[in-house]
Image (cartoon, rainbow over all chains, first blue to last red; front, side, top):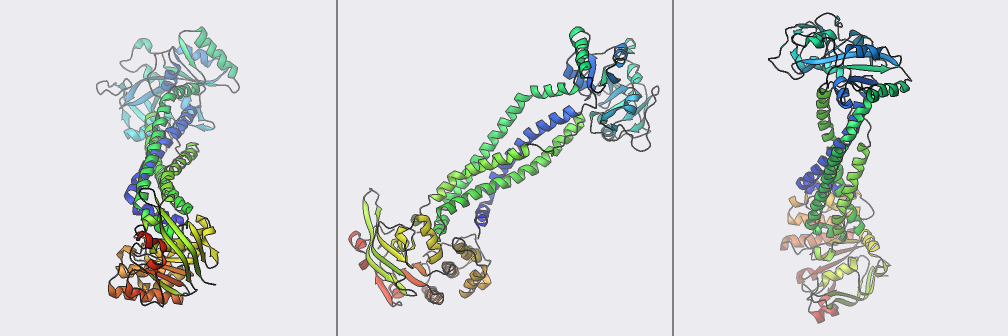
Length: 400
Length: 230
């Protein structure tokens, strides 16, 4: 009979307390991986989900707010900017493409984003990937009351090609703020895994001239999404200088992903607090294993004495106690990965719904190595005191 | 050459006040290969301590213990453990089976600290003690008599040269005790193992050709009245 089998029988004898200890290991492991892997994956994915744009030009305000509003369709626009500003930057030699967007309306909480048809026709949201329409849908006509809906938004409100809807004023849904215009869905976008999936796209004039909107702002826009020409890094610096240092009316957020990374950096303290909590939970789990096994060794003095009388060396009983500790830890780790898969999927789905960013929770991450290694080390340490007790068991006293 | 030979064997323990007390002081004790010997004496006269010394569970303070040509007192604790696993079988008064192990696992447990698990031999031993139909029963589900038989099979699991039985029938009624004793003696004989059986039961001891009055042999217990025999 192998020591592993003997350790397994020992754990089975104390199935309830062993399971509780393993569960605490599972929870701490899951928490550690969630905090660690999610942070780096979210950072990576959010920075990569820039929709294929290098920069955003918006009204004077926070770069982060402009990027969140224009690229991730989160937060509010800090204000409005003029159409001429869009035309000016579009004409810049360093700019490969520029698309204006306007926001300010919603349909049952789903944001309506006004833009030009060229954005949906020509823009590559990822290298070599353009927007595609499901089935026999088509893009909206620039001067018609037509809309194209993102795949996730379509699922969320259950709208398909041919359906009609009235927009509501503002970014938050208010049933009393209905606009009179009636829009028709002409197409549903194929999923892109970008924030574009969770909004409704309409012609930019639709937002600008919606009934009830200020007629004086009928040509204003919320932001301009900018793709620079390849190798135009210098131009990025120059535009940054032009708009952010010399000008005081507009903000040029470049590179677009940097604002998001800076946002995550600002959240670093929170991340550290969560990691500290997770580490404490792991230590508590280790203490739980020690308590369970130490008590067990007290109860099993006679069994250990019998093993020794049958020829087991002190090192052997020490090893069996360590194996039991590792057995609890490995069971807990297995549980941790299962919990991580379940909780991680839930959180990833939530983030996808809220921000339109698809996280790959199983993409390679150091957390998947260091968490098991760390917990196994804790499990090993937790087993030392009980193992030492087993090692020191007095055979003659316990063989009565 | 005898299978077991002890010479001037002394073991001392400290009492509660920290004073050293001699518990075993046996000038000489010899058992030949295949021999079956009974050592008798009242509880507390040092029989169990003597068996622990002979098996290497305890280290002697003085003297020599030779088992199958090996001087136990010169071995480290780890090597004594190994030697015990390979050469000595032990039957305890209260059997000390693992309650959550099956009969087969209990016998295999004895093997796992020795030369290795031989599942077929473990089965054969259990069949020999009449438990071939209870291989996968948990030890705690067996009757007391059956548990004793599993303990005997476990003691013989590593084909030991010497079997030590400490009051092996102490927990059995008279009828079962007789059956168990016969079985121990028969199986030791069939497996070529010498037997030292410690008992305070005169009737059991009388069935052996070799009988040793341990109370008389042990100079220490004579002086200490067996007060520290454990």
